[in-house]
Each structure stands twice: as structure tokens, then as C-alpha cells.
Length: 460
Image (cartoon, rainbow, N blue to C red; front, side, top):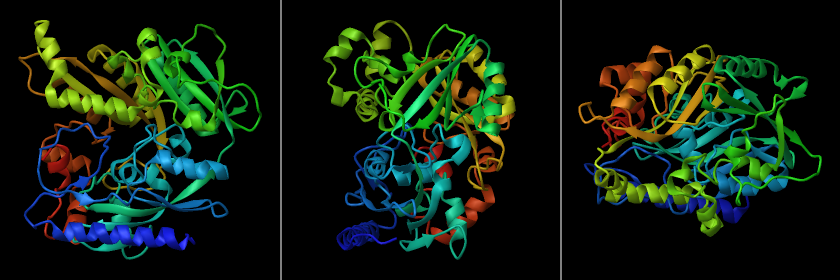
């Protein structure tokens, strides 16, 4: 791919700065990225150590509209990438829901969206990537060749093998609009069965389905949202103002509720209200919403509020004033096989007092040893993001531990962006084991970076 000379030169200079900042960190000092935003919900040990200089690695290097590919720096957000690709009528094959998720973050830490039933996870559209390894070297990893092991082992490694500095990804054509059908179900089993048929056929009742996800409000009220690309002009909805997207899904009619969004607004339909989590800040109260500046109706701002809460224990202090114990944070995404999804959802609705929950089907195309979904098999991502009452007599993370046990029992996996409580032996059985150890020895022989268990579970 040919990139403008100045863009390529800026990229090379930025990589040089990153490598130099890595080399300057003492061998016994912790390594972290010096970045302003994060979409991780794990607590991390505080450190005053300098971070890696990634300030200049946040750009789109080039878009090749003819080849339908993009060269992108590792810290570039999907928001900025989409701004560069949509004018060409193109978009990444999978665009995670939140604007500040970075390309490198989505690949090393996984991501998912409503195209995942046909395009897998974000790392499956990567054609090649340059990685600063734990050994301090920049290597180019591709599906075949010298560093194919790193290419396949990088997803779900969370920066413990290295950091992506450049990624070349495939793009797909998109139309200016997305036509939506919100289909209501009165039982979860029917929803899951319909989801499976759509994943197999790519259509529902004779109409093509390009985008597919769902929301469960209760055991008797759930929805699939079926999206179809369209160039047909017409009126569109706007959920960046007073209307809230997830509430627009609900209806009582036996017929699907229809809607239309621009492709831009469809890609970011969940970001304005952080799915439904903005209600915790009062942002869905009509009186508050009218006063809430539009520029602050986005996930990155809500995340800052959460960070302040964690720093000053605001929520726990409020609970204590009411005579209640602190609440346990339950912010997780898990995948279970399609055939076990209804079982998990019913269990969750009985045991964990959180609603709504998000459903997103996914089919992986290849083997990815650190997150070993079976290629070609349909899994369903179940997302739930809130907190639950904490029993002081229970161990720390009691609800999360219970969820981990259930997911494992149903032959599923859990993303590692949030709290995890596995014991070490079980963790390595689930997340790469000997394969990860081999990669660690090859690409981080002096263990300058934390290993995956230390980072994801011990939260060092």
C-alpha cells in the first residue's frame, strides 16, 4: 500500500520514539502505555513509572479504496478510522461499539459487533501488523511466515507479548444507510433459534441481514435487531439527542418495528448512552438530558466519571450513607455456544440482578490459541455491565466468580478486559497455556512485560 510520504515519515518517527522510550525504561521497571483513554475495567496497581510514548501513533496512515484496505497506527481509534473510510464508502469489517477503542486494543484485547456473525472478531480482518515485542524489536507478523505464531497468538494477549504499531486491515463496502427491524420475542429460546437460522442463512423472512444483535430485557421480553445496508434515501432517526436508542427497540406489536439510521449513526448507536449505562449518571432522565451537553453524551466521558468514582469511592460512600455495604462491579462480556445461550441467559436472569443484557452472535474463522473459539461454530456474546449488592459474608468478587464457573461449565469463554478470579491452573487451561509460554519465551525472553495471568487476574 502506498502512503503519502509525509504520513509514512511521521509514522516511522513515531515508531522510533516508541522504541526509544521502551529502551529507556529500566529492565526491572514496570512497562505501561502512556495513553489518555482506556476501555479496560480491571483495577490496576498504581505506578509512577514513565509510560511508553505512543502520542504520535494515533493516525490513519493510508486508505487504499481500490484494494479495500487501510494502514492504521496502533493507537488510532475506530472513531478516527471510520472518519477516514466512510468517505470512500468503506468501513472496517467489525467496528466495536465504542468510539475510543483503538485498533491495537481491539486486536490484542478482542472486540465484537453486529457484523461478527459473518466477519468474526476484529483481529480476523487484520492482514499484517508491526509489533514492538517484549524483546524491544519491531517485527512484521503475517498469517504465514516467520512470525505467524505471533500473528495468531497476539489476539487476547493484552500487551503482554508486545504492542501493535501498525496494522493493515481489510475493509468492506457500506451503503449510506442501515434499515433496521426490531423483532420481539416472548421467550429466549425462540430468539436464540431465530438467531441461529439467520447466522446460517444470512436472511430473515426473505430479507438480507447484514447486521445482527439482540437485547434481553426480561425472560419474556427480548429483541433481535436486524440491519440491512441500503442506499435508498429517506428520513432517519437521531439518537444523539433526546431519544435513547435502546429504548427505541421496545414495542408490543407482533410485527417488527422498523427504523433507519445513517451508517455513521448506526456504527455509533451504542456509544451515545454507553449502551444503557448512561442511566447510572441520570443522563436518560429527560430533564437532565436537556441540560447535558451533547459533546459529553459519549462513552469516553462516562468512563471518566467511572474513573473518578473508583478514585474517590463515591458510589460506596453513598451506599454507606444509606446503611448498605459496597456494591460489586459486574462488567463482563462472555461467549457461550449458541446451543447453550438460552440456558445461560435464564441462569443469569435468575442469579444476577442486572438488566438489560446484550446478545451478539460471532463465528470465528480460524484458530486463535489464546481465545480458542472453535472455527465455524456459532457463539453468542452476552454483555452485562452494572453492579450488584455485595454480601459482606461472601468472598471478594462472589458474583463474578459465580459467572466464571457457569461460563466454563457451558464450554464458554470470558473476555479479560474486566475483573477475573480464575486460579492459575484453570486460567492457563482456558487461555493458551503452553502456546502462550512458548510465545513469551520467544518474544519477551527477559519477561519485561507482565504475563497474561499477572495482568488479567492478579491485576499488577
